[in-house]
Image (cartoon, rainbow, N blue to C red; front, side, top):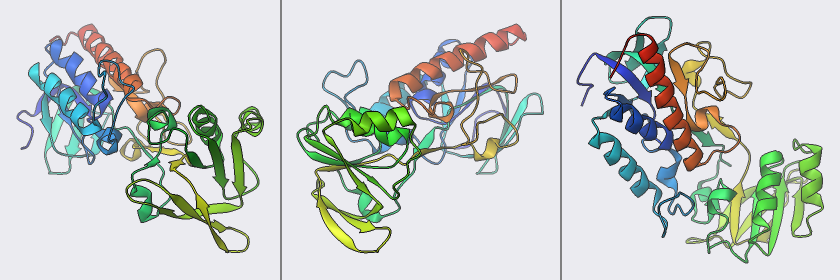
Length: 314
């Protein structure tokens, strides 16, 4: 279904925890927002089978089920949503103009960007095996990983942080890195090296992940000789970075060298007045559902106050 109107006071791009929380707060303020859900409705949680660290869900909840709860709560207060993708934005026009993949176009007085980020992948089909994760803080404490020998792939600060965190639950953590040099900061690298539970497989890449359901091991390839070897593991954590979904905003909003949108902390204001950003699209540090939801709340309040200051009320 196309948007029901041509103009909205608030348009929210993205439908993960940040987007739906922004919609909840904006709709309760009678701003009648629209959510353009994007290519991946629900965001990264749609591929998470169990969420145990979001407050309020004592026994945990499946990621897709959680996002459906978020959706229903926002829609209860009047949020409109469309299964469409924003392909272009004009932030120089007032009101702002959004072009959708379906060919529709709409305008909005304020825009909240909550397009999220995606974890960089190894590029092998077997990484979709249950037991492969891109977030140790999210999944590391799950029973499936406790007491197991785990593999962390990567050589930056994220990999060191993930490996160190996982030693709380795993019997052994092996960091697999394609080189002997690391991008990680010295302090993070030294901390990992000093941890007796952390082991190293350098000049190596993961060619294959074995086991289904559950991980039983990986095939490693030596980057110098090309030889392969089998390595036992009860889980794999891919920590080679994230890519924020900001391509359509390049040249239109300030972002860092990786592409994360810059906001004027502690607010969610971007470099364009009336445009706000929330969640993983502007957060290279925490990347948690609960922090994204909190930023979505802040973005909606920022947008409401900005609109009110310009005489546009709910």
